[in-house]
Image (cartoon, rainbow, N blue to C red; front, top):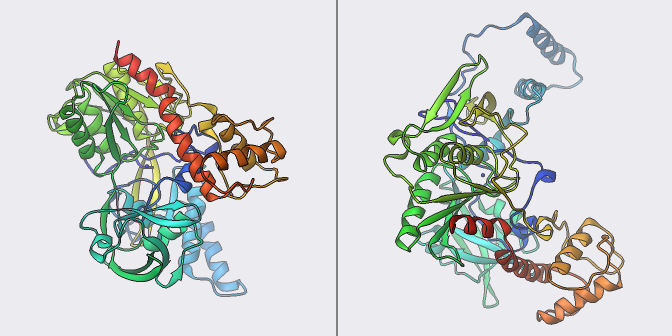
Length: 492
């Protein structure tokens, strides 16, 4: 989904890591997110955080003598700088500087939009209209609409083309840009112009709180006795959604479960504790949290977390380089305390705990306050968990992505290399994979276009990349080595 709580019985969380792109192993190519995956018109970036009690700027604290330099600098700027500077701006700069001096990517000072994004995602709910948009070729199309949502009530339909938001055209913008304009504060009004049957109409809607699904589930295609539950993040509703998914899969015949944590960057520690407890016997260790004084608090499975709901069926967990923080806590707890096999690749390795404290209405500090240890006492920070069974995605499923949709003869770029890898995976001859769009690549592009009912221009566009991604997605379903390995492990 970057916060971990210090006390799971209170408002504390496990910080979702934000792995650097170079460390990522994608379950699904990054470019799929922008070209084909439906993006919620209500979603926000990042994962959820619970706020801790507000920090009162007036609280009496010991101020070291060294801070005299800070005050002296402030006074000098206010008295001598060639133009007036807002005291608030200088204060924000001082706080940002202090946080930056910690050299800790997980300790940050968040203001305005960054704070709002972090705050809103703790509940996996956002101010929006309850519809999703998908890029189809060069058009933004409404893909789905939630029942009883503002979009549904206003008369929006699937298949409508998104044209403008509040009178400003979004027809040529990306999904992300358009979504950002539609999102907003719950209760505020947004005007969305859609095109249907060649005619435009503007729908006025009041943004509502929409809860995002963080858990999806389905029976495995090759073994219907296995329920596959994918957890995207650890937010407020995740544990309840997870429990519901297990019950649903049981009703459909599942006797075993694969829990897919690949690409899950973490979230609330309280959620991870609740879910981990579901898969453990009461009294088994979930995680250990060690403060800076070396004092360790051990959290153990029990009814206080899982409310008596247990998963006693065989389990297997899928992890990869993007599985971080709270997802690592869950994986480590089940693996070390219940011998649940981990399948995939080495995960991220984030072993620190963050708390978030508000500084008024528009700012907050996210600060690392402790480190967490696995049940056997290991600190996996910057190391990650080693899978029981190693199984990676195919190389073509790990491409860096596309920065542009148009590529043509003579181009040379990382995007062209990604195109070559993708076409080669689909069986087309692209020659040497070197990032150069030569005649061989042009021929491959034309062949792909002809075979998929697209204009054979010999250069790429959004429609071609969307189709290519659709085919690669289907291919990945049959060539997911980690999923295959997990099924074999559970069928033993």
